Image: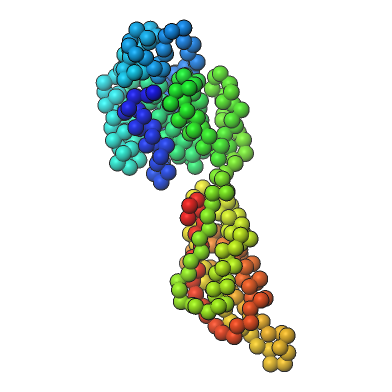
Length: 326
């Protein structure tokens, strides 16, 4: 087991789905690279424990490691470096994302200034944080390299190794080539595969209206939008938006109007019309998403209109939300 303080940080990093760590200072990655940390698997002599392995006393630990909280840990620490790491944990708990980046970078840099290798748990922790910012290609690449070093350097069955592996698994969404992790040394590039994207089976589509119409034709159209066929169309819109902008949620509103056209000469030519229009004033990615959702909703509108013969008019606004757990 890792120490309670480190366990708390790693748990916070892994649970924080809403607080995406946008670490804009690539120096936080570079410091780990400059440290020269050699990612090698440590072989334990019989009856002795390496760093992060369990122990009953210091005599159970290899070399100069000491037994702390039933786990072998290094005696060589930077007091100031650990202080900055504590600031990083505090910033993480408070949701201060820029403070997290600054504090951890200062912690690692302090160790280097004191001619000490940054503790492995700091580097592993940094990699997990960068993996949370995987929408940034440079940060995702750095996360993969640091986490690979982490899993090579710590005992494979340790809690910290499993947490690092969980973070590496999320990088498959941005093209991590998992085969590279079988190597015993870091690769040149990691994001060389095809991006798998998030699990589409977890996406949910929610359709709601402004409640201005209670007509059966309106209710029938809303129900059609909620059908599995139309949900698949909306999910395709979400997937395209995710590829282009890494947007985790699409929230689009469209205007919908209904009218019935009577043909005075031929009843067979009577027809209903449901028109779906995008909201005015949109631009950029919002307009792209709206156009896709509008086209998908229009497909449903055509099918519903063919089966509707209600002589009425109505106009309403419909909101369509697409995302995990929406």
